Picture 1 (cartoon, rainbow, N blue to C red):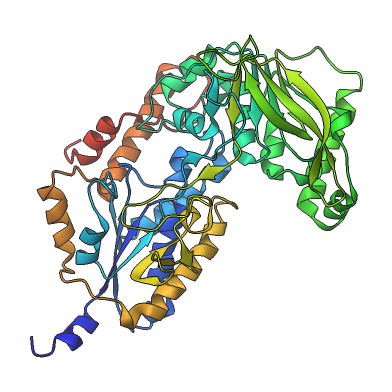
Picture 2 (picture 1 turned 60 degrees about the vertical axis):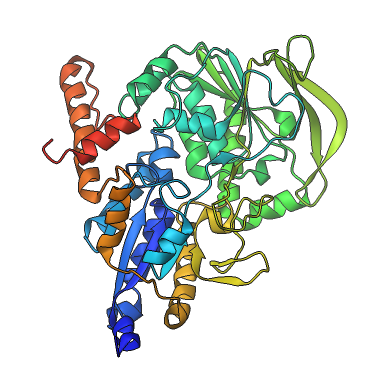
Length: 484
């Protein structure tokens, strides 16, 4: 072509986004709405890849089913993808079905928004004993993740949850809540049946620091009090406030609200009350885990969790803690560690193991020498680590898309930008990819399952909006069956 540069500059910029959770959808939306696109400086063509057959990532597989307000974010994401200017390709796994060199051949730029799905490590003896679980694994199970076992061993009467963030409270609430309360949610039947058979009586949530240093939010805290037949138990000796704590309470309305809420619970608990509930949720502060052990006191071997030892901590004046040398042992038969998520490495990219992120500057992915890799970007938790709420990913996306737009005229152009090329490649490799139309079929199918359950169980008065389909093969079959 004699005028290839001019022709190339006029064709749409082809962008692949790997990960269709909030971070990926926000990035796609921001790019399509950028001033440069709206002003006609260039056109953009975006393909959004997802390892699961369904979109929404963390919203579908990382948020407790009894969080309807948080799951309402799905409505906003749905509107973005339903416009038709962003193509969704599900059931496509990076590193298996596609590699970076495949993407670079077909797209001018790629944005990784793969999130963080593994549990952060808890480095204490005994963490490998039977009955010690990762909170993220439990979340995946109760959210009907297609790639985890359908069974979960809920056999413990007394359970410890380590962590003071939203995930820890989600895990604790799901463990202590009576299963029938969850029937109004999209909870899969296998999860409902297992939770219904749980013998749990006491769930203990432990945090290293004080009540003013918790990482959960007022919404999460308030939801604990909504569970029926569950008492919340707090301990006066845990309510310690140093100078930094007092300042945080004065200057931060969110912290003030949470501390006031817990203090009120503490006062109400020690007032004259009604008959005790069948289950209790204990909130402990200033506890640092030392070891998990079996019935014989062993922290290794084939034994089962029988207890967990903590060192009592005290605030040091700065909001941090130091050990007191006093230890306390709690009899529990299961331990759930929920101290955070951790990202996973991605093929052909550098990886920061300590922080669980792809090394980057403002979203520009860096190579081993610390230099930006042309046309490769990151956003969301794989960019900044698993901190902050879902809404914070919008700020990430704005920064990353800003970098991409700055680089637009210097991006290495893909040899084969034809949108059909990726479809041909996936079909050639036998990848059973799903589409947005397929998701709408699966979405309607899950809602129909909910309606059928509601009609069959009409005598209960429970209305189910949907029942989640769990097996990957069923999700694929329903999504790809255009005659269904």
